Every structure is written in structure tokens, then in C-alpha cells.
Length: 153
Picture 1 (cartoon, rainbow, N blue to C red):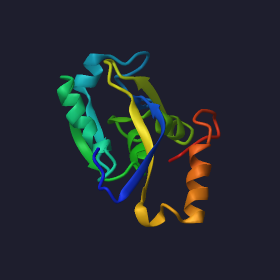
Picture 2 (picture 1 turned 90 degrees about the vertical axis):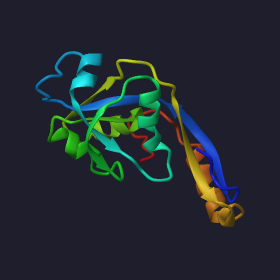
Picture 3 (picture 1 turned 120 degrees about the vertical axis):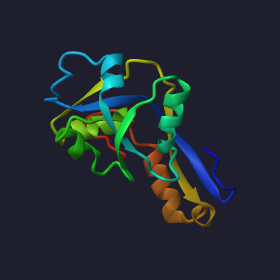
């Protein structure tokens, strides 16, 4: 995603997308297949300005479009909606782990290969030299990227 010259960014880590489903999904039990992907309805999350909305463009380029039944403007309600429905959601793996710890959901590797995504922190130039912001960015970039107590969402 191209950002304006007045915006800085720093890569934190890369991660994969996974598919999130309710634990009690009636048609997805012991495995998740390309047929499940094609036949099931999906919840899409399109967060303006973050690049997450580009997932559908990428899926179309790879020839694996999804049947979107509902679109959300943020990830906040995705876990609860997936847990209480038969919808599937494509989310970054670390977010899926966070959701699974709070809702009766499970995650599956996608039944096809997609490139990993870069998770970045982004800030405006007016904060670039701010001591408090420098400290916060330093704290965030040095967080471990794995572990049960690590979340960035």
C-alpha cells in the first residue's frame, strides 16, 4: 500500500492469513477444504487505509474469490459474528489466535497458498521526532511476535 510522503512506516513482522470458523460449524468438522471455501459464505473486513481490504483483490488474482455475505469496517466484531454464525472470515493468524482465546472459534490454514502479509506500525511526520512517540514505537517494535500473551490488536 502506497502511503503519503508525510507518513512513516516500520515493518514489525510478517504473518499468514488463516480462515476463521465457528467451532460448531455444521459443515466444517475435521478439515477445511477448497470446496468449503468455495461453497460457504464469508464475512469480509475492509478497514479503510490499512491494506486489509486488498485481500479480496488478492484472492481474485489467485482465482479463489469468496462469497461475501457481510462486510465489516473493522475486526472488532468479527470473532463474535463468526462464533454465532456459519460465516467464515479471513484474518491475520495472530488475530485469529486472539479471537480463538475469547470466542468458540477455530482457525484453519487456507486451502491454497497466499503470500504472507507485512504487519507495520504507521505514524505521521508531525510525531516522528516526538520523544513519547519514539518511545512507544520502540516499545512496539521490540515486542515479541509469538507467545500466548502477545497481542498487537
